[in-house]
Image (cartoon, rainbow over all chains, first blue to last red):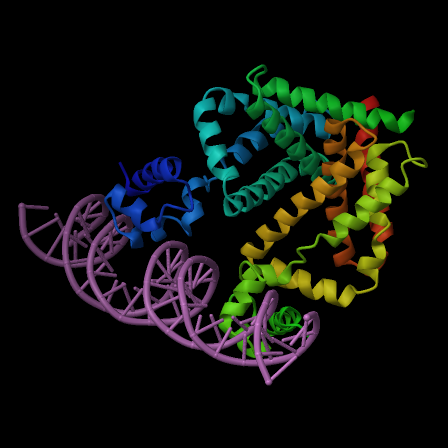
Length: 184
Length: 184
DNA sequence: TAAAATAATGTCACAAACTGACATTGGGAT
DNA sequence: ATCCCAATGTCAGTTTGTGACATTATTTTA
């Protein structure tokens, strides 16, 4: 196992056991059998060890969008569907996602980091949509889609009732309800 | 002048002159004529000195919403109007807002902090809307409204053409265009 | 295979951000 | 004038993060 992975495993373990703020980079490095210095070579800061820098979600979502331009004309619906399309990412590893989420919610620094990741996600979706739609419209749709995704995620966390895709759909319907009010 | 204000002034000056990362808390404190320790008593961290902790915007926006429930039935439109209602906050001090924005955009830490502030804003709007509307619908409307606000802010930064309220309206119209596609 | 280049890790020294504990001061209230 | 309280200072220490250079694996190539 590469030291990067070892550090991620060690960090996850310690964060769970004693909380994010109570574990030092020193401890993580020791548990992983490396030096503090190599921690900071793999991750730009302490919080970085929890965040996937490669933007896997963004790539999957963008791929879905480019693959489905033809069957779906409405930018927002397309973007929302793209989030539903990655529901396996969540449903298949509920345990891990929940644990991770709990750590993040326990600390403001981590929440901020998560928020920044959401901006990257918005960009991915915006770029994917921009191929076919007007760029400003794409950005707005992307922003709305990510908000819908986020609300769906929160609901998915709270209850075991529905799968991720269903929660996304539920929030999308809430959006339809919201917009229908325009024409009352 | 209270030391808190002195620190804010000193920080703003130094951040402008030599950038956020290149100025130390030490320097800010010295310029303000106090100790590093009192800086950290006033602000929870270095970035805090740039952020208004009292959520003035949230309060103003929430106030507008509660004051205008009767004249406006549509939650999103109401929320968006509430942002237009504080346009003086921006138009009246373009200089300062631009300078501040430039500092924030120069550093990831500050961007994250700004993002967290937006969450607080979302909560304010959600709570205000919840008095009259369903709570989930309120949250969705609040999230969308804040995204619209943010896009309007970006456009307002980029061009001197329109006032803040006009930019908000412009993005809202973009939203209408987006939703109309539902019924194509 | 041996030598040489390259990548990963270690060592060390240090700056900057932050905190806890306790001392000092500087105005208001009495 | 004195007492009180809040704000500030002092100081010592922890943790995060970085630069510079040494050492050790790993891979390339002669």
